[in-house]
Structure formats: C-alpha cells, structure tokens
Length: 383
Ligand code: NDP
Ligand code: GDR
Image: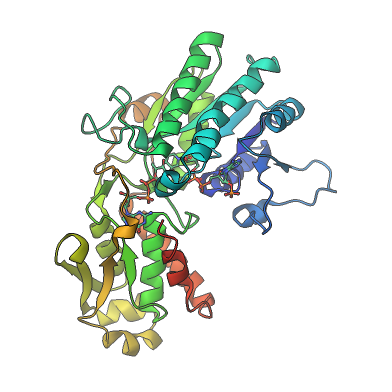
C-alpha cells in the first residue's frame, strides 16, 4: 500500500518541492489549496493529473487554515499517514500589516490540524511535521542557534509560529502524538516567492543586466541570514517524519551572509562588480566594473554594449519603507543534531544556490521582456 501524505501549503515553494519528492518515493500526495480568483497552482502544475484519471498520485482539496471544519473533513477523508503542515502567511514584513490573520492562520491553524487528528482518532496513525522557523530566535540569545537556544520572536509572524511550535510539543507530550518541529532557517530556490529578499535580488539583477530595469530599492542591507536550498530542506522534513521518535530539529547550513553580500555575489556571477558607498538610508550600490568575457558568456554578447554604458551608475538604493518595525539582525544555525541523528546532508551551498536562482531568473526574464514595469510593480508593495 502506498503511503498517504497530506501537505497544507502545497502551492508554496516548499509544498511544490516536497510533493514532487514524495510522489517520486511512491506516496499518494493530497494537498490543500486555497480558492483564488487567479490560478495559484503554477508551482505544481507539472505534477497535476486530470481528476477523471484513476489511481492518481496527486489530489488537491480546497481548504484554508482558518477553517476548522474544512480541515477536519479533509483529514478525516484522507486519513493520512503523514501531515506536512506548511501552510502559513509566511512573509515577516506583511505580518506587521496583518497580525490577527497571521496569528489565526499560522498559530491557531496548527492547533486546528493537531486537534483534528486527535478528534478523528488518528493519533496513532498520523505523523505530523510542523513548519517551524529560525524567526523564533529573533533577537538572538546565542550564536549559533541550536535546538536549546531560547526563543525571542520579533514579529507577529514569529509570535504566531511560537504558538505553533509549542502546541506541537504539547500535543506530542500530552497525547503521545508523533508530532515534530523542523526549525528551518531561510531556504530559497528558483521557486521562492518574488518578494523574499533573495528572489527579489535575483529577479532584479536579471532585469538590470538585460536592460529591463534601472535599479532596485531594498530595505536593511546589513541583516544576515543563513540561506540554504529548499530542495535540501524538504528532504529534512521527510527524514524527521521517518524517525521512530518525534523530536525537534534545527535545519540550517551554518554559514551566514549579509543581504549586501548576497547582492554583490549575484551580480558577480554575471561578471559585474558592484560596490557600496554611503550609509544607512543613503547607502547605494553602483557598478564598479564589468568582466566582459564572463558577462557575454553568462548573460549574452548582445546585451553587453548596452550594459557597458552603465558602469559607475547606481543599481541599488535603500528605501526605508522596506524596514521592519523590529528586525532580526543575525541568524546562523547549528545543524549538528540534524546531521548526526537524521543523517541529513545538504547538497547545495550558498554559491550553488545563487547560481541556480540567477540562472533561472535570467532565463525567465529573457522570456518576459514585455513585462517592462514588472520590477517596479513588485517594489510598490513594500514587502
Ligand atoms: P510560501 O509562502 O511559499 O507558501 C505558503 C503556502 O501556504 C502557500 O501554498 C499558500 O497558499 C499557503 N497558505 C497561506 N495562507 C493559507 C491559509 N490561510 N490557508 C491555507 N493555505 C495557506 O512558504 P514556503 O513554502 O517558503 O514555506 C513553507 C512553510 O515553512 C511556511 O509555513 C513558512 O512559514 C515556513 N518556513 C519557511 C522558511 C523559508 O525560508 N522558506 C523557513 C522556515 C519556515 P497560496 O499559494 O494560495 O498563497
Ligand atoms: P525573512 O525573509 O524575513 O528572514 O523570513 P526575507 O527574505 O523576507 O528577509 C530577509 C532579510 O532581508 C532583509 N531585507 C529585505 N527583505 C525583503 N523581503 N525585501 C527587501 O527589499 C529587503 N531588504 C532587506 C529583511 O529585512 C530581512 O532581514 C523568511 C520567510 O520565509 C519566513 O517565512 C521564514 O520563517 C524565515 O525566512 C526563516
């Protein structure tokens, strides 16, 4: 009998990679997606199967983390062996604008899933993975952060996730559930949402070198993140649920990098050296030089003449609208427990992640050259 997994948030970055990974392992994957006035399944369209087919291995259900009855009905119908609770309003900056909704979806939403499993009598059958986050460490109390580091959340998102973390631990201890937290540090990919910082940068850099956009407006350039690849991180989620005993794990790379350095690194992959001058809100990044051979090889010779004129010009500016009321300045995770207990061994480092993202965005932006105002449209949302 094939194992059955239920993924909440299947239309998101992690949900898409995890669904593909589990289907390859022979699972039947059920996913919960929200009703939307636009198609919202782009990340999993390649896995989609006609509902008229028999023996499908991907089945989608309409649902929402704020709707207990809906979640209970779906879990009761599907009776999953494993639930991966990935659905969340996942943008930290936006959580300051929508704090109550974020608490409802990200915090109480997790309780709804746990309680549905309990009330449906699935406690012994269904294992639960909770998508916890390095944002719990917030104003960090220890460097690097590990499973025992005290939490100090710094946003409505992180506070909601703190509730979700502890209610997962509580259901494990109170009812003996196989419920575990993966405390995942930032993980990115070509499928990353366009308003998270790495993807915003790789999209903008692609558009700038192609001559589609002049500059990009950023928030805090000095904060540091421990970035890994989503493809590696979803494997950790799977491994966590294959353990005999439920537990909580930090998933990270152990390397931290500033936003400023990630911007420099991304341009450098295309032969462009960007340097920064000025401070705080007046800081800006400008093109210092171009390695013409590398640029021609990576971007295309036809774009070189136009781009060379831009040497000396500003391509990165700071707009305080992107600052957060409370910031998380430094994250760096200690993944010893995951490596030793789970045997988790990531394939990507930041360098190969950056190459994967910029290569993908260059290809995409070359196809989408008609979207001449796209970069600015995204910027207007101040995420
Ligand atoms: P995304 O934002 O890409 O995906 C979130 C998913 O949740 C989407 O499918 C979204 O649907 C869905 N969703 C949002 N609100 C609701 C709701 N009310 N009801 C049902 N579904 C909802 O996030 P990621 O894939 O990057 O992250 C997955 C999970 O891991 C999230 O819980 C996130 O908070 C957490 N996390 C992420 C990290 C990261 O670096 N990526 C690190 C640590 C934790 P739609 O497509 O319709 O918007
Ligand atoms: P984060 O990711 O808040 O860590 O949450 P994000 O990429 O949004 O920000 C990382 C850092 O970059 C700074 N920053 C900017 N961020 C955005 N989005 N846009 C900008 O223009 C910008 N300029 C600078 C931010 O201030 C921050 O310091 C992500 C989400 O996936 C969460 O769901 C997850 O829990 C955590 O990672 C781990």
